[in-house]
Length: 332
Image 1 (cartoon, rainbow, N blue to C red):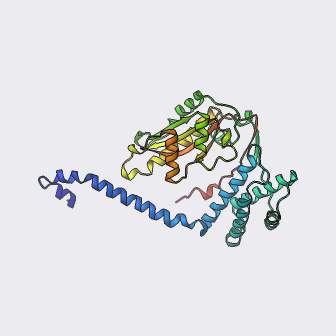
Image 2 (image 1 turned 45 degrees about the vertical axis):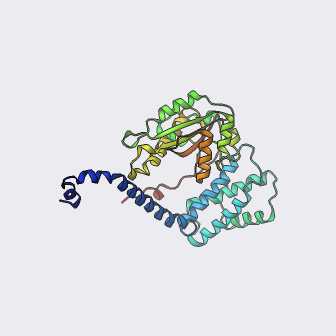
Image 3 (image 1 turned 120 degrees about the horizontal axis):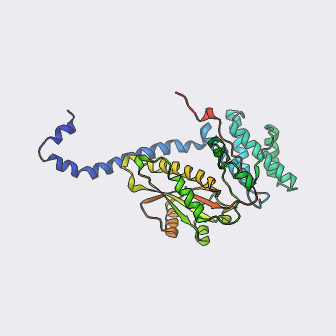
């Protein structure tokens, strides 16, 4: 018999034991978040110390460049500081870990494409940028990557194909032209409901913003839509209701949101809605500002924004190459 079982057999103790449940629950929550906090502070700060951290920084930076290459009305000369920092990170990584990593080569290929696009347009770099690009491409010769150019018909041509082909055909779109209907969104959300959910509690909510003014006010609080946010027709805000989770399920509301979000992304693609997922990695004050604009209920945590619209006749897609399967699948 455990001590807990013994105590509960004492007359009158059960009443007081149950009265302590709220305090025990709060203490458990404190322990859980303290555990999360310690791990996050310990390992997230290694961003510039470990191989994985440096490579993650490289991937994030070259993604900024490849996104810029696909923007509507691309601004020549964009991303100077990001480019110079990326080049410095690439040299740093190569000095410590070599230059054979797939994502390393992808980063160099994106810079080679950036250089080619600007040279073909007759754009003259400042001397520092010119020399930095030249030194990198001399040290690591790599064929330029080429961002994908498609027509609207090509992009949506596989929405009824087998899943392996269909899923590979979905990309983030950052070029919108024209409106989409609320019925398209409704059909997509109805389909997204098929996503698995812990104990079928279904915590996810979708807030649809259709007012052009509100869409732009919301997007002004998010830092990943520069260059195309003004073209967004409708905005989806995905939230997760904290009221459905117990204390040890603190992460489940977010994992469920991720599952739902991916299903919704596929459903939007199936309904020919061009879209781009936008992270909501903000400080509390910014989170509160968005809540004031949209009146999101306090128990709902904002997880992600999705910018939606109709695709133009011709547009570009970022390649965003995926890691090799051996870097993802660990067989024990």
